[in-house]
Length: 151
Length: 151
DNA sequence: TGAGGCATCATGCTTTCGGGTGATTTTTAC
DNA sequence: GTAAAAATCACCCGAAAGCATGATGCCTCA
Image 1 (cartoon, rainbow over the protein chains, first blue to last red):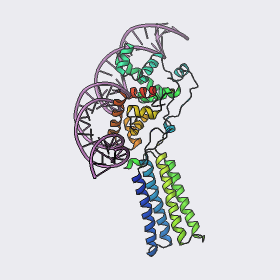
Image 2: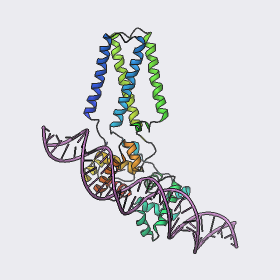
Image 3: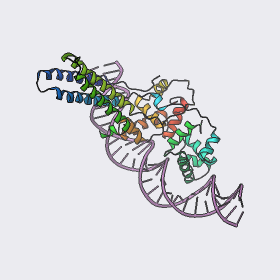
């Protein structure tokens, strides 16, 4: 089920456990010192909390584990492509460009396929981007698939 | 790296700070209780360390998530993504890059998401392209969807 | 008949992508 | 312990993509 992930390196886990043990040892040692009065203890505990929180953040971010569901959540389209074209104001020609774009074609290839110049393809794609509210063709493809504009 | 804090929402930071303050308050309150002797204090501090470490890990992980980029899943593959990764020789890290690529992210955004440099992302994406036998990222997305590498 | 939508094309400019190459470090495998 | 694989980063350079702007011709519809 988990297709791509990386375990937390054992070295990191060991380092983490060792640092915890070191802090515990430091606490034990400090018990024999007299600098740790009641007021300082609060700051000491707060410092431990901050240190381990920071270490936890670092550990959490350095681990590569990432669930599929975070990125790939299927969206069931409730509208037909025609309704979505109407909704976004996408013209038929722009739809053609979008479809070929999603097929992996470059602007030049789309231009040759549609017998127009590459500038025209750029204009159409720019219009599609602004109408879909995206900046790049990959975003346009993703949004078109998500909304059901493209199967 | 200061970029670590870029993607953490302010609400999360506030929540985190508030929980820290609550724990400190709980510590203050516990000083007036008598259950906290010398031996229990070590366990108490260790508990705080564990709690904050866990919270830090959660924070570190959750800050990498993104709820918006979702992908519609039209394909019923005959092979599992793991088998396809094995077939194409795609590594887990390259798979991550491919997934974020399909989510519409630019190389720069992928780099920020994975906390690596844009050069690393370019290397991974180039490897993915050559392994999939394509030239552009849109082609890679298309092929990955067709083969079932990506839902 | 004139306004507006659509499709077409262009030019200049900036950003991003992708290929190629080489390198170091970390992790894994034997 | 060593070798292979994986992950990381850097640099150069050309191609592609994207943005802004303006223009022309066609068609429809009021």
